[in-house]
Amino acid sequence: MYFTQLDMVTLFPPPGTTPGVRVGWVQGDINGTITMNSILTAPSPPAFAATGTAVIVDTNGDQLFLKVAFNGTFAGGAPAPAIYAVAGSFKGTYTVTGGTGQLITKAPVGTAFNGTGVAVQPQVAPPGAPSPAGFGPGAAFSQFTSSQKGGQGPKPK
Image 1: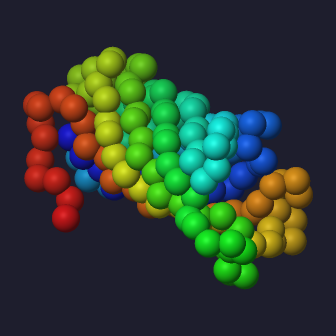
Image 2 (image 1 turned 120 degrees about the vertical axis):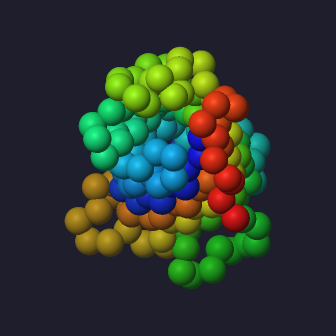
């Protein structure tokens, strides 16, 4: 199984504080929405890591519950261009912890989805942004493929 994920980073607090929030959609062998909460750490910049949980809800209402883990690198160059505050690329693993309906049948507990992605946060939070201590809305794009062989279609190009 594979899917492409496109989401908006709605809350990006400083590393090691409270969970950030991403909401968006997935498309491929799974089509629906994703909501993710994760805590970012930056143990030795430019490296970063994040761990948390997510839920995918397919268009038929089936759900997958996931444990998420990311490792990545912030884009280099100091200072950052005026258009963004932070940007970076990452590798991630989503591990299925539960689910409902056909999704849990196709991706049983323990199935791992591995992928890569990129994310960017704006330089200045827009007025009314939910996190004055962090950065406002940003964007992320990633592609994931499961380790399970059954039902796997062609990988995205």
